[in-house]
Amino acid sequence: MIEEDERSHPFRDSQQDAAATRTLPNTAQTRAPAYRLAFTDAEFLLREELRPVRLQLELLKPQMIMDARGIRSTVVMFGGARIPAPAESDSARTPALAALSRYYEEARKFARAMTERSLESYGAENVICTGGGPGVMEAGNMGASEAGGISIGLSIVLPHEQAPNQYVTPDLCFNFHYFAIRKMHFLMRAKAVTVFPGGFGTMDEMFEALTLIQTGRMQRIPFILFGRDFWNQIINWQALADAGTISPEDLELVRFVESAEEAVDIIDSWVLPCP
Image (tube, rainbow, N blue to C red; front, top):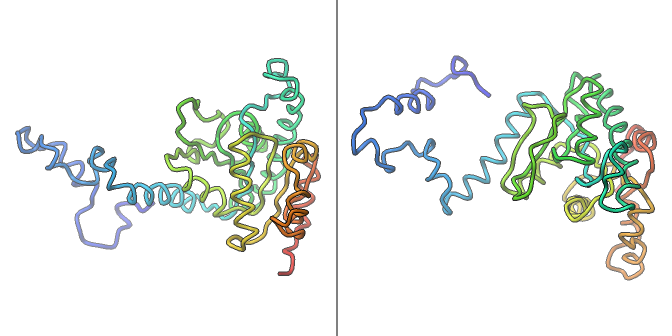
């Protein structure tokens, strides 16, 4: 973000004009929607025809804020919003969901360990990035907070969604309208992707990222799935290769782990495979 006194051009600043419009005489002309400055007119910006502008704004705002904070790389954590903390597992909707609560703790430990590495770069590298919600996302942001570092939360407006979890760094807590732009921000700085057990949203994010890597649209990075039994029960990976719908080498794009320590070891020892 550029402060007013850092601007190099001689033109009047847009913020000055926006402030000036709030002191105009109250007349029929100044009250008319047509008279509003376009960039301060919410009704105008929300019109159907302005969708391309809104897409650009959603891409730019987090980008500019993270650039200003000096964030160069992130460690992404996808995972279920419904997975409870171990202390709350008795309230889980199903016994299977209660059993998955151990991954809440592994997510917290993993985020704490990666944030300790992030602090070595003063918060520029390995910054934890979650969807900002409850469950695994909350555990990730909590672990980063416990380590004394920052973390990112990429929330999205949903009819049933709650406020972001309390552990997201407030000035790195973003809110999106467009899923597509949110997904871009998950991956634009990603140094590693971790995927914990989850539902439709988790699988959507996982397969989107895997497709980008598989097709060469994104550089290969550590792609780590927590909970081999869970994922092998949900997805028959080998059947995809046996059917020929994916290549056998595509199975090598993912690594399975059970603990935070295993995931950290994979990231620490990562060497980009030869093409």
